[in-house]
Structure formats: structure tokens, C-alpha cells
Length: 221
Length: 247
Length: 67
Image 1: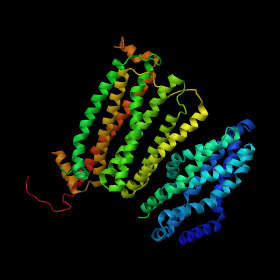
Image 2: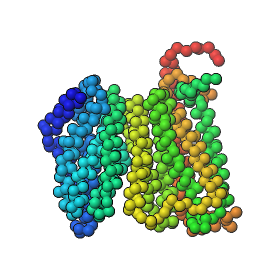
Image 3: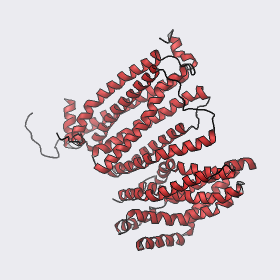
Image 4: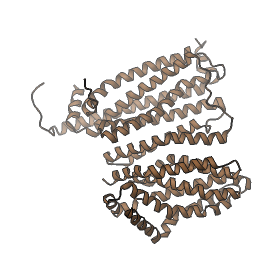
């Protein structure tokens, strides 16, 4: 446990040392949603209808960026080999790294999301719900994404391959996240979608580290 | 009597067995396809709702079944490859992927050609169609992953791991797409209600499904042989086999 | 028997394009896969035979007697 804490502090320190890198996903999210709003007719009705889906797709693409760099720098400077040899079980290492990365890059995205929701004229309850769904959803996306990051570690055209591998696996999270926000928006209820999203999040946080650990061992042989 | 389950997991034995079985299954596939097409076009009656257009069912349903079944078989061989570490399981898992992708594409293609006259649209965001499209993405991802990794051992195991992650996700994807679909589409088109099937229609469909199954076995065994040669071409057994083939 | 004539059969009650489009493309692609596979198998076998002839020394010593 102490080891995990040490690793967690190290990861956080790395994020704080280069805040620009960590925040690039947020910039991407902000720009992408703005472009979305600009590309369509700014009629309130249309914006409200498209808003939940557009915000969620942009958040999903942004978390693809977050995941891409998850193991890359540690792998390049050899830290990853050390982590493999450390007494901390590898799944725990992966989970710690993913959690730190989520806090550094995805949480800011979650926090700014209500402001971007205003661009799409979302209703009050949808604006309140949006960060919650994004928090649960991006957590699931980052953990599932760690599998893809481990599989494509050190490969040519890794980032293209990463999106090809991960996008099919991301579909359930996208569907339930966007549906929950849309449900809050048109008042048709969102509890069922939100609980399924929470279930997906818990399942991926629990199981994905084991799969990524297996993939990491493969990449470092 | 003790059965040696690993008897055919030795590459030379598998190579010889596959060489004997593959043409056999290929002939079986041709025979069944001929019979199935005969049943489908000349015996099965015209459907009273869909006219002659329903005859696409004789190719659409078999390729759709096979496309999903092949993914399960790939997952099975992947699990075997990871647990037992037998070379043949890795080769089989790799050999099935292109055929599976082909069947998935054909399922979408024939589905579109069926959908256009029946519902007036080439594509409907129905849960089954959407899941089939996502299945195609999974197959393509498997092929891309294989192509991107140079080291064969790593490629084998990475693909096996990804296939297993995918097979866990397929039911979740189907469930979520179905949920999304029921919320959005309402009762516009009902795809679940098959045309009332005459027994000859059912027979034709089943025979065609068996033909697709035999074709898959024949093709995957043949591809597995080729892959084995590509991988182990310089080994003693491969040289001896090829010398035997030439004689 | 469902069909009076060949043109009846090809017409498929107005669905000819769709029915033959599905069956035709399926047949075409399966035939293509089979053809490509045979070509690949032949090429691999040829390559290995060539390599064996160029470097006939076997990797391991084996019995040299006639069968």
C-alpha cells in the first residue's frame, strides 16, 4: 500500500511538473466542442438536441489523447521495467498510474464541462448531471484505454492503432453517458442510464488493470 | 483408454491432418451450397409478404451466423493459446480472422441489399445491424494489431488478449445498442419478426448455414497450413513435408 | 417449380438487382478469398523449396538411408 502511495505521489508530481501536457486534453475538449457548435446551425432547438452527444463524443476523443501517453514516457526511459520488477503487483501499478492520469487530465475536463454545456443551451438539470456522467465515464474510458495503451506500446503508428482498438470498446460508455444527459435534458429520466454507467465504470476499474498488466508484461519482454 | 488431446497440436501432425481435411470440407461446402441454393431458389415457395426478395435470407442469415460464431471460435483458440501455449492454437486464431471479417462484411452487404427494398433504406440503426458493424471494427482492429507488431510471439499473444477483451465486450455492446435503439427508434420497423417460415425455407437456410460452416473450416485449415509454413518453413518437418508433396 | 422461364428467374419478381447483388457478391468474394489463399500457399511452398535447394545441408543430422 505504501508503495502504491509513493508511486501515486510520483505520478502526481510528474503531472504538476508539466501542467501543459496534462491540460492539452482539456484544450482539445474545449476547442472540439466549440468547433462542433460552430459547424451547425446555432438554433437553440438544434443545439439542445445535439448537445449531449456532441459533448460526449468530444470528451471521448479527449480521453483517447489522455490514454495515449499513459505508459509511453515510462517505457522510453526504462522506468517501466523497474516498475515491473518492484514488489507492487503490476495490476496495482497500472491502476495507480491510470488514476493519477485521470486526476491530472480528465478531472479538469470534467470541471469545465458545465461551461461548455452552456454553449449548447443545456437545461439546468442536464448541466448539473453532465460533470457526473463525464466523471464516471472518463474514469471507465481511461481504465479500459490502459489496455489499448499497453497493447500498442512502442509500435509504429501506435496512436492510429490505439483509436482503432479502443473505439469499439468505448461504445457502451458513450451510449449510456450521452443518454443520461439527454434524459435529463428532455425530462424523461436518467436514473437507469446513470446506474448502468456507474456499473460500467466499476467493472472497468476493477477488471481492466489485470488485462493491461498482462499486455504490459508482453510489451516489455 | 487414454486420449491424447494434444496429439494434433504438434505442427507436422496438424499440417498433415489439415492437408487431408481441407479439400474434404471444401467439397462438402460446394455440395451443401448447391443443395442449399436448389432448395432456396427452386423448392422454397414465394413469401406472401416479401415476394421473391426474401430469398436473400438464404445467404444473409448463414453469413451473419458465421460471422458471430467465428469470433467466438477465435476467442476460444485465443484462450487456449494463452493457457496451453500451443503453437497450433495461435495459428488457428490467426487463420480465422480474415474469413470472419469477410463474413461480417458480407452480412452487412446482404443486409443492406435486403433492407433497401423491404424498409426503403440501405441502412437502419437497428441493434443487430449496429452490433454487426462494431463486430467488423473488432475484426479490423485484430488484423491491424497483428500487422503492426513485428515480433511474432508478441503479436500472437497481443491478438489473443485483445480477442478475449473483445469477446467480453460484445454482449455489453449489443445490450447498450439495443437499449439506445429502443429509446430512439420507437416502433418504426420491426426486424425481429421473421417472415413466417415454410419448412422448406428453414431447410434451405440451415443447409446454407452448414455450407458456410464447412467453407470456414476448409479455408481456415488451409490458411493455417500456409501460416505454419511461413512460420516454420526452415524446420526439418516442413522441408520433409514439402519434398513429400512434390513427389 | 417456381419459375416459368429464365428471364423470370433473373427478374426475381422485381427484386433481381437485390437478390443477385447479394448472392453474386458473396460468391465473388468467397471465390476471391479461395484464389488468393491458394496463390499464397503455392508461393510459400515454392519459396521454401527454393531455399532448401540452395542450401541443402539439413540443420540437424538425419539418417541418410533410402526408405
